[in-house]
Image (cartoon, rainbow, N blue to C red; front, side, top):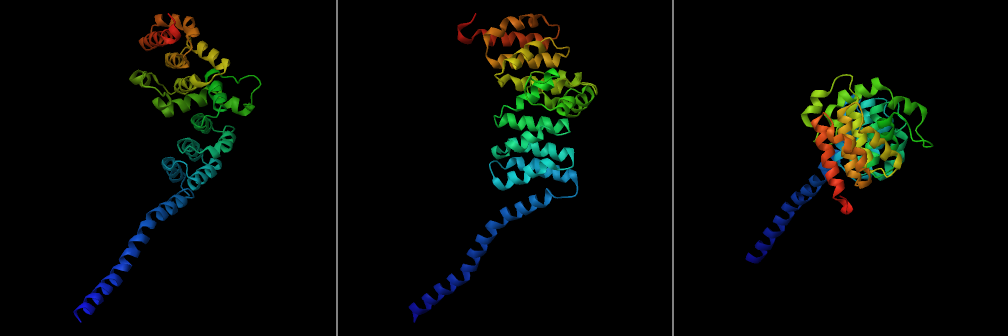
Amino acid sequence: MQAGTGLHRVAVLMLVSLPVVLNHSAVSQVPQELALQTLQSGVKDKDARTRAIVLRSLGLVPENETAEKLVAESLTDPDDEVRISAASSLGKMNARSSIPALKEALRDRNVGVILAAASSLRSLEDPSAYLVYYAVLTGERKTGEGLVAEQKKLLSDPKKMAQLGFEQGIGFVPFAGIGLGAIKALTPSDESPVRAAAAVALATDPDPKSRDALVNAVQDKSWIVRVAALDAIARRNDPVLIPEIVICVHDEKPEVKYTAAAAIYRLSTLRGTK
């Protein structure tokens, strides 16, 4: 009787605890489902700002087919800011399957979308990004390569580029060497942050045309662009370019002068060059 009672108690405890175990298992699935439903709802929200916020947040979910699809579909959203957010997040997500869609976004009517798509393509190691950065820095397109006329017009429009540069501010200057001086130098008519970012991006473009564009940019009227060009030349690790930038050591702007000196020093230490 004692043993039977003991077994009965064990059986009752097992039956009582079973629903608890099942409930915990079910609950463990709820957060993921709830999160996905929330995101799916957010990308369809009637408020464009909400859609943009959701798409930026999805940049935290790399290499996920469902998330990539949500973001890629928003590259055709009617709102510019939403498309910018989508194009930007795809690079952070390492969404290689979205490269064709990002290339198509390079034809967007909005300069911000074009630059965001180019940034993502560059992070995904797709060379088509360099077409955009070259056009931004030089105002021209590489001969024989496919920037459409409307895109070229947008990227070479000083007013549009200046507005974008001022709105984004120092965020478009991707290295800290410029610092506070660049922020103080910005005005509502200044396009230099965008062009500076383009110069730095071209550091990894092996095309000789980009190398030549950077050499020309060390004489740019904007000191911010001059610093960016010198930074990019240093990162190309080509000692042959030293004679092209020696003159910059005498630049009146200390930011340019010392960046040039550092670039020359770096390049002179490569391959035993003196």
